[in-house]
Image 1 (tube, rainbow, N blue to C red):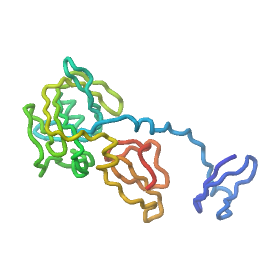
Image 2 (tube, helix red, strand yellow):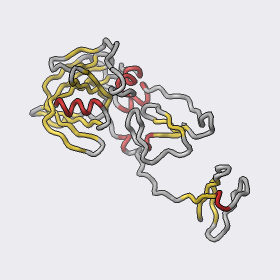
Image 3 (cartoon, rainbow, N blue to C red):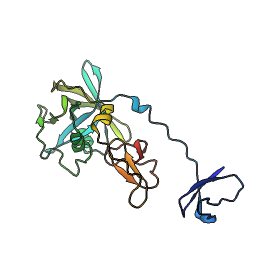
Image 4 (cartoon, one colour):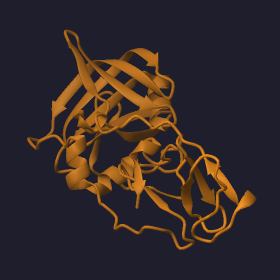
Length: 247
């Protein structure tokens, strides 16, 4: 069987090998019918979603500018000395600041965090906006870096002692220089964010021009187009096409 798409009406259909393809919807044939090549199925990401992650606001400072981003990639790797790992997308301004200054601070998000806090530090770029402008729920630590006091339960500061290039990301290993408990609220996991903090937009199906709306399940960014490119990366949260669904 061969698959075809009609460029006139958009219908997709299958035709047995050797048969002349004719669109069953508008009866068109010939060059207006384009073959659909079978693509290898992308590996399912559901298993990765079973991994439990915390959520953090990672901050840095360079040349007098403070910045921060949301990440789920902070974890303790050794206890003597106390070391933590952090992975940051290379497109993030925070990434460059950490790489250049060699230090960072991670505020641990708690279940008291709200979506507005996630939006401020996760859904805009520090290259275009001052994320700390008009934001009073923060304190400058002894290391000179800002940490967030709203919707957080702890802060951990570290100096970078090694890095690894992971292609799209850099892995930082940091030796902890300071840490402090800020509240007794339970930490927010990635799963908790998706179920209880993230605002879920209503389903819209298609855009005004009839094209399909693809929505990022992580941040809500919407891409409009009949097909979502396999290599598409969300411009807001940097998640891949596998984290998009039809809206």
